[in-house]
Image (cartoon, rainbow, N blue to C red; front, side):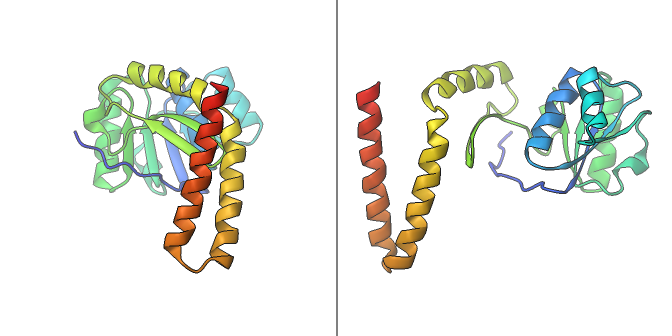
Length: 194
C-alpha cells in the first residue's frame, strides 16, 4: 500500500483509543504529545494509563466499545487484543468516515503511526508502510544518535533568521541562498566534530 506522508494537526481534537494494554499506552502517549483530547475505552487499563487518567490528561470509559463511542471522534486507534473487535471498530469508523488505525493490521488502516524523532519542531518520521515496524525502530535509534538535541536550538535559530530575512530581504531567491549558505556552514562545523 502506498501511504501519503502528512503531518496531522490533532490539537484539541477528539481521539479515541480502544484498548487498555501496553500498545494502547504507547499510542495514547504519542497522541498526548500532539495535544489531542484522548478518550480511552477499555474495561481494563494498565497502571500508566490509569495514572494519566488520575492526572486528568485523558478520559477513560471503563467498558467495552459501543458504536456510538465514535460519534464525536476525529481519529480512532483500535488497540484491543481481539482481531474480531478491532475489525468491528474498523467497519464502524469507515462507515462514519473517521480516520482509523488498527494496530498490527496495516490493511485496515487509513493511516499508520511511523517511528519518529522529535527535536522541538523538527520531526523526522520513518516508515516501512507497516511491513517491518522493527526496522523502523532500528533506523530511528540509529538516527537519534546522529540527530541530537542540539538540532532543536539550530532550528529555532534558523527560524529566527528566516523571519528576519523575510522582513529585510525582498527577494525570495536571495533569502533562500542566504539560508542555504548558513546551513552549509553548519554542516561543515558538524563534520569537524564527527
